[in-house]
Length: 157
Image (cartoon, rainbow, N blue to C red; front, top):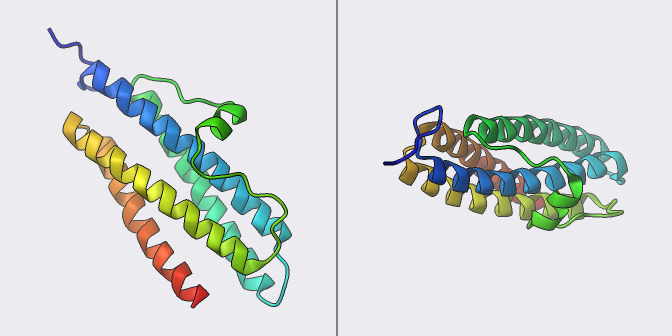
């Protein structure tokens, strides 16, 4: 007989999905710290507009970090919370000492590409499991981030 978790999803599938969400959490945490650093350290003629945009971006990432962690808990699993684990699991590299606005934006675009791809994988896995909650979350994230990626690409010219 199939074991269901508290929200009625097959436990084995929910655990596998939570593992993918933990991978997403790791990517978001590294992404967040990179953007936080860009916000603090960007210099140049576009400082004022980029400083504000980076703050908007890291605030959005912080909300997503919390939502992803809570989704993992909802699936009956535990979100990882050690930064060393995030660095091991993240496809997004830790950025250091970037001051140039264009380089910051390019890094953000690279990070969006990584999380969008991972979220598409999670979306497919969630759909297969019948997990509407995770599917809706990933779908919302993807549509928002695709638009942001388009805007940042346009910003770069």
